[in-house]
Length: 166
Image (cartoon, rainbow, N blue to C red; front, side, top):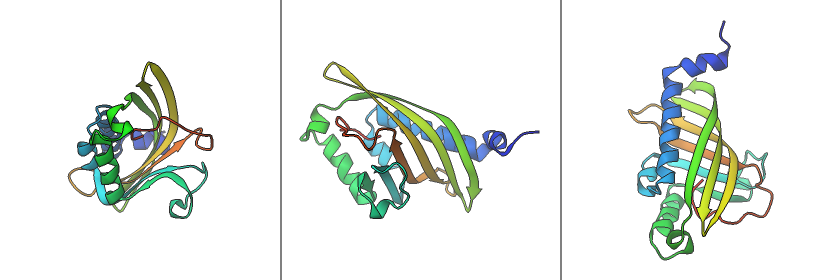
């Protein structure tokens, strides 16, 4: 007898969600930020909280709390060539794994996973590890990100070298 978690892994919707998250990771590693923007629901939020336990992102300080306009500005800055994050951007390789889900309700799927990013810049490699939560709208032909929360395991420490999207 399968438990609910194993049943989710055989679910076609869950499999589509995992494939979508892997595609997002690949776009970010290629620095294809304009294609990444297309993955988002217009009302979605990209969140990198400082407090590892917060759930009220609007009322707390975050490294990032981007709506559509702020995501577009971030991508513009990163692709313009005028900022340090654009002209000397790190090359990244990310691995996303340990997928679990809370099921599907009203066309919305929540997928939790872990992510490890190796960022290489100026001869130095830096490791970033995080727990991710993706809330995906699955009502259209193509999934859309409604919310992505990146909980860095060292979020309460001084961080540097985050000149790329997590």
